[in-house]
Structure formats: C-alpha cells, structure tokens
Amino acid sequence: LLPPNTVPPDRPARPAAGPPPTPTTVAAQVLATAITRPPQASPKTPSTPTTRGHSATPAQPSGGGQAGFTSPSGTAAPACRNSYDPSCGPFRWDRDPGQDQPEQITLTPSNTTVRVGENVDFHVSIYDPDNTNFVECAFKWDYDDGAQVQTTHCDPKPGSNPCPPRYGPWDPPAAQPGNEDFAGIGHSWTTAGTYQVSYTHDSRPNSCYNPYASAGTATVTITVLP
Image (tube, rainbow, N blue to C red; front, side, top):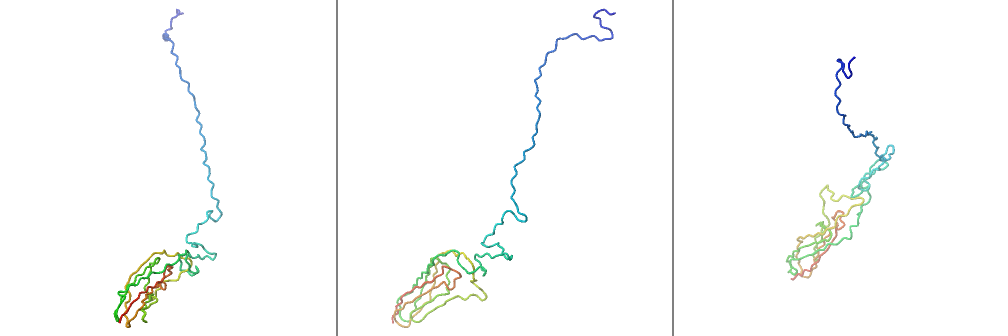
C-alpha cells in the first residue's frame, strides 16, 4: 500500500487546479426558413374572336370611291372620279364651280380720225376674272364696212385628241384671273364716214371642260374723212 496522496508511478500526475473558467455568453440566433412563392401569372388579354376562314377585322376599302370594290362577277369596279371610263356615266362637276365671270376686252386704235385709205392699227387687251386659259382661235373683227375677219376653232394636230371625253364626277379647276395683250388686225376704209369697229373674243369653243371660259366684245368709233 502506498501512503495517502501518493501517485502511482505508472500514472501521470494530475495538473494543478487552475482558476474557474470565465462564463461565455453567446447571442441567441433565430433560424429563418426561406419560403419561395410561385410566380403569379399575368392576366390574359382576351383574344380577338375569329371566324373560320375569315379575319375578324373587316378589310378597309381603298380610297377613290368605288376603287377596290369587286362585283359579284369578279370584275373590279372603276374608280369613277376624274375618269375617262364610259361606264362611270355622264360627265358632271362634283362641286359647283360657281358662276362664270365674262371676259373684259379693251380695244385701242392707233387713231380715231383718219382719211380715206389711211390704215388704223388696233391693240387688244383681254382680262378674265376667273380664267387664265385664253385660246386665240375663236374671234371676229368687224370693220362696219362689210369687211370681216373671223375664225371659230383651232385645228388639232393630225391623229391627236386634245380633249378626250370625260365621264362621271370631276373636280372643277381652280378659278384664277388671267390677262393677255396683243396687236390686232389693222384696217383702212375707202369711203368717208363713221364706223363702229368691234372685236369679239370667245374662249368657249376651244376650251376643254373649262367652266370659266367665256366671251367678250369691245367696240370703238373710227371717223374717216374724205
């Protein structure tokens, strides 16, 4: 037997007792659980109802009145505006162009008093309040002594058609004022007296569907001395 408090030789000695351990405080941790929600579906946009074999949206007609319309026979109808197609019916203005304003003509002689055999020249001025298309193919000079110079139309070029027929509704042209100045046809008289010389201009016979074509006349007095 060993004496008390004696460590056997085959056992290690116990370490000396140290100071008591310092207590450690650990903050409490909260364990969270992640929750994953499924994505919300977007609200569905109602689709446009369709009919089998046809688009649900009606086709829009093309411009030009009847343009784009197909008759039951399968033939496309003509665009009956400003048309040369006889199937569009009689020609008409599709807006009243208004009342035509007549031409205003001024006739100026080189002299108002001459002797027999002396020539008088003339200057012509034409003003039309609503027409710019003057045609110098329909006029008449009257010298009051039986002599006249007259023409009624312009001859078109061979094989040409300067004014093809129109059909259906047409837009009228814009009214615009116009004027023209030119030398007239002079004349002399063989007998003394007083003569009323007149000049008439007419734009209508040679105008191609012109609602503003008109006519006018001017007169001057010439005294012829012996």
